[in-house]
Length: 567
Image (cartoon, rainbow, N blue to C red; front, side, top):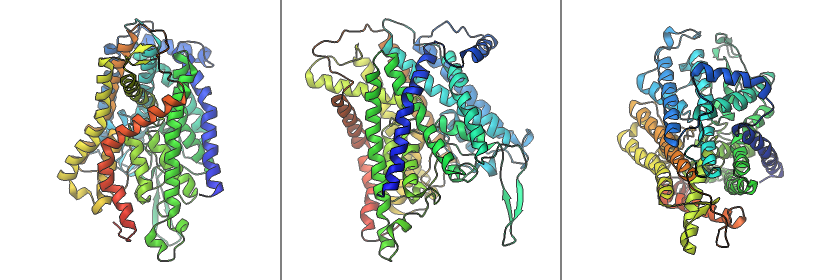
């Protein structure tokens, strides 16, 4: 590892740590209904939205009402996005004359953007019109991100309230997340991106003549507005097929840094919001510490594996660092390509600046592990926090078993109901990644061009990415078939809503409990001992579930590299 690469990684981590209390404090004030910087300007707009939609902002909802409201909004969004794709040939803002999207692909894509997955079985510039990109994808990028934030806030209220039957109002949380948080940051960010060279227009594609005399079509469009929410909302869907490796999406080193910071800032900030809203900021820092340890371990492993190079190329006299550049972002180098790969899978974003298929086997395994652990290393906006809180319930339950007393967390007794709900949420990931992945592997092998363990990893990555609502692809896997579009769509729905519903049920359950004062037997949950226990539980659960299939995929491929066997 070179000093310059390490310095880049350390600077990024320092920026995120510095921004965490800033973002966390703002969100705590916002969702507690207190005055924030934009209140004088946006409060009238907020009240107007409630009047227009007939929402009583002062009426809190039981967790079941909160969940039904969430499902209704997301169902409406999915149906609208599906219709836009199926009718786009007759709709305006289609200068390239894009045809209607096939039913199975439209279903997959609609589900993808509503679940904050943004898996793409299509090329954006060759399949979707400007109207679909703006009124469909960009709108859902805002709504799906706000949905995740709302669920996290509802779960925080569950732990901060006592003897309460309500966990907040979904419509209010959704509105505030979009209006005060996501929209202002995206407007400012999009202007900066335009200044850096990211296009934002409605012009037709441009035809250019290359130096060789060939004709080339240069796609453009309203890119900057989608790029900002794509990263800030950890959505990940690229305007172009090349995603964030495309020079229009990521033209400069500054833009690349903005993208990386945007991916983490809200997820990290929500840990601080949690600490503030439950009345003990140390709890938030403990959660961030657990996330941070796993993140640093992943970056270290990926960077180390990449700079070793491919033994087959080294044997031919190729410098390891030069050989490792295949499939990477040559403008930013191995360090930032490795960092971005870990960030995008740790945060359930899915944007990529390098082909994960080109990573060395052990380096490619790290993004897989990030997603298999349940999108809890920062995670998707909101999803990372409520996913980590689900693991915390497991951790305090195990701690309670070890000392022989009822587990507690933040003064709330964790009983059978909460543990069962947490187990259901955790079991969803192997069901989608391994269960549906096995069906896809057996029923649709034609979509897998690579042989051996690498081909297995391609399928495993796709279904893990879908279930974890990440959206990044390993590369090479031909997902755009009716079978895989359907199965991947089901995996996305499972990974999103069959985790959200237990999380909201937990919120409702703990909100109704009385707060028990801490005693001499209470296990402190703000120190390094708890952080270590939490990390151990996460790794054990993930290891027991996924290690066998990892051994058959990237681990076997790594071991076979020694004999220069390639796939």
